[in-house]
Length: 302
Image 1 (tube, rainbow, N blue to C red):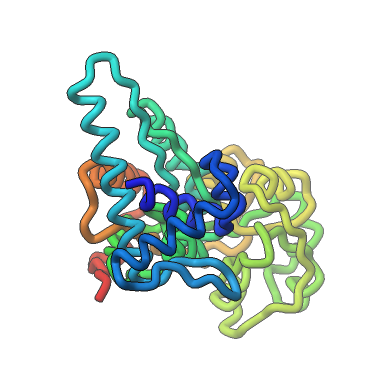
Image 2: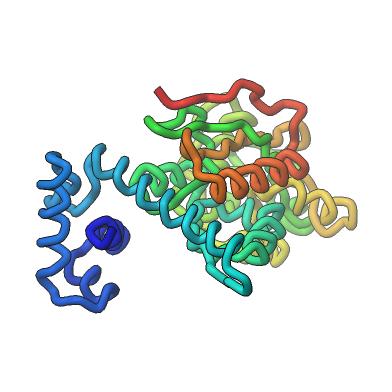
C-alpha cells in the first residue's frame, strides 16, 4: 500500500522531489518505490519526460488506489465511533457554475466530511484535468467521455449578452450592427472564453474576432465591469434576468442567447463515496439548469 500511496503522491505533485517532501521521506525514495511497483506489476506506470504523467496503466492503478482510500474513509465513519475521517476529493467546475448553482453543492459536500478541492477552469477545458487524473469528476461542454469515464448530460446554462442602458445608448443606439460591434469593447472571462465569438456568429451569421476586449477572470468581476459601463458581455441568464427586470441591464440582442450544454464526467465504476457525490451534483444541476433544450442522450466512454 505504501508504494501505491507514493505513486499517487508523485502523480499529484508531478514531481519526485515535491512528493518526497509531502510524504516526509528522503528525496530518492519515491523514485525507488515507483520503480519497485512497476516491476511488481510488470508494466510502466509513469511517463518521465518531457513532463511526468501517468501512463494508461498508471491511470488505472491511480483510480484503484483512490477507490481504496475513499472506501477506507467511508468505512471508518461507519464503524468507528466518533470518527471524523475526511475524504479528499478534487472536482473541476467552470467558474460560472461555481458562481451560480454549484455553490450550495460545494457547501453540502463539505458538510458530508469531504475535503473539497475545486479546480476552476473554462467549461471547454475542465475535461483535461480529469484526463490527467487531477480530479475525480468534472463539469464540461464535451459530450464524449474519455476511456474509463461516462458523461451525463445535466442541462444547459443559458447566457445572455447584456449591457447597461447607458452603454447601449452610447454604442448601440442604432442597433447591434457589425460596424458598431467592432468599435465597442466586450468583456470576456479570459483568452479561453469563446462565448462572445459564438454570440457574434449567431448574431451576424459569420465569424467575428477582431473586436475590442477586456478580460476579467471572475464571474463577479466580469458582471461588475459590465455594470460599471466598461463594456458589454455574456453572463449566465440566472444572473442577468433579475438585473434586466430591475432595469440595471438590458439584453443587447434579444433572441440571440447562447445555450451551452453541460455534462458531468465521472468514472464508469465509481466507489460508493464518489457515486454519492456524482448523484448530488447531477441532481442539483438538473434542478438549476435549463432542461427544455438540453441534450438527452448520455455519452459513454469506449
